[in-house]
Amino acid sequence: MKLFRIVVLIASLVLVACAQAPVQTEPAVAAAKPLPKVVAQKPAPAPVPRAAPLPNVDLSEDILFKLTLAEIALQRGQPHVAVPAFLEVARVTRDPRVARRATEVAWSARFLPAALDAATLWLQVDPDSARARQTVIALLVNQSRLDDALPHLHKWLSAEPERVGENFLQLSSLLGSHQDKPAILRLLRTLAAGYPTVPEASFAVAQAASNADDQATTLASARKALELRPGWELAALFQARALERDSVDQAIVFLEGFLKSNPGARDARLSLARLLVAARRYPEARKQFEILVGEAPNNPEIAMAVATLSLHAKDYEAAEVQLRRALEINPKDPDVVRLYLGQVSEELKRDDQALKWYSSVTQGEQFIPAQARYAGVLARQGKMAEARKYLQDVPAVDAQQRVLLTLAEAGLLREASAYQEAFEFLGAAVAKTPDVPDLMYDYAMAAEKVNRLDVLEANLRRVISMRPTHAHAYNALGYSLADRNERLAEARTLIETAHKLAPEDSYILDSLGWVLFRQGQYQEALGYLQRAHEARPDAEISAHLGEVLWALGRQAEAQKVWAEALRGQSKNDVLQSTIKRLAPAILQSAQ
Image (cartoon, rainbow, N blue to C red; front, side):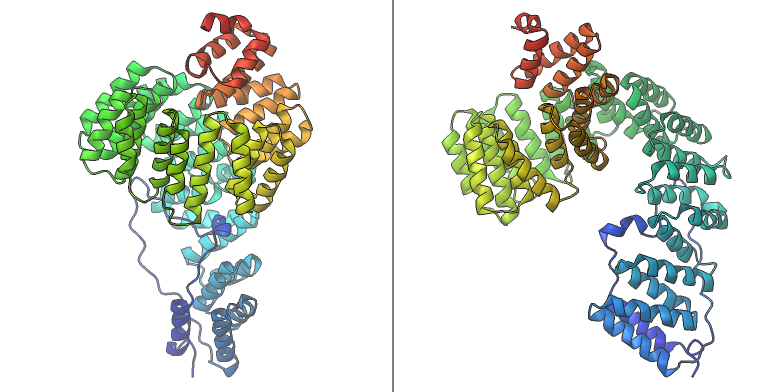
């Protein structure tokens, strides 16, 4: 009997196996997935499915045995047996279906070298398969073999000239998570050089340059993409974000110009409104809100976006109007709207109304935050015992909710400056429920407030060991060392690790600036602190930025930063102590 002339038996084996044991790609190897689909501006029609060339091979007992062995081993959770068996059959038969199956199984088991072997064989026996080539590319990239991936990338892009733009966007998505950012930039520049008139090619280079912190190339490539496709909102938004890194005002000017030519670009208008709020140009931001609402009066997403920006601008009455509008026109998540309405009511000193809104939030993602806010209102009214009992009585549906309620109760104590009580409360919670990273992290933060630095360091190191991607644990430990001016090299390493995990986090940028300042690198520190302050003008960030400016001899700028911070956050301990130490006259004038 011929195996691939009469394919029913083996095909049924493979198909049944696929149905019984579907391949689930692990999140840890997501960077090596086949290229994800990205919708381009004008997507080309999908290619007509093509039948793969099938070999003419005898179905021997040995082949049948190995296929059966592989499938049974897979069903029994023994990929170390299944993968070699599939690979051996694929090599003997050179059947693309078996090679693909071997690839999928090896990939699912995270046997990536074996997956690459299988995918390479798959491509050899079916050289016209775009899926096989994409898989080889993804696996080569995953294993940092970019030079080996390059010829495959050239062939993939040239094979579908009508889809080259879409494929560049897919490629950018695939390569974005690769660790060697400069190498990815070089790779994309090489590929894009062959497509000088394709806007997506320039856009992909701009994204890679941004990831590699090459600001000049980022801006040049983003501008080229927009020149090649005027009115391309995605490229305009990207260029605005790139400009924002240097100057919010430059980004505002750019978006204003883009909107003059493209007045219907809603996302660009929303971005402009956000930047105007960040620049505290509230009357101009309000004009953009009015345009957005006028263009889409019955769009709940627009109403929510305008409401959120109004909240940032502290225009609470305008926010309330838009939130009520969003609630009336059927938002995707009404509980989010109710939670925001409760917060707005608090800001407007309408506590009874705030409590009603929080009570109306149903069991779901916003339920615990709403209960925490409800208790916070009670505590602010001087009803601390009642607030704590309220949280203790909230019915938790699982252990995670109970942890969140415990953290909320500890938060009430911190807000009341009951630091010792918060420390003891969290210590008891950790003793009762050990090895919960969120509890241990908060316990560490409480320990810092009562100068129990031994507890802080022990718990943060435990959190890091349990959750190596917990950026804020690295940051908190590094910052605690930097703030005490101790073990600065170790502090910097910890904070840089946090920065790699969360490169845009304002508090981590602040910590990085602060440790550089402690190491005497004032100018380098200033850049990070300015970025942190632009994104989040928090009192502590303002204190640090002002101190670095002061050390650089720019006292007038420092005083301006501190004076602005005092207007909204005058009770912050770090801000107060910094100003008292360096410019006490500012505090006297602010009183």
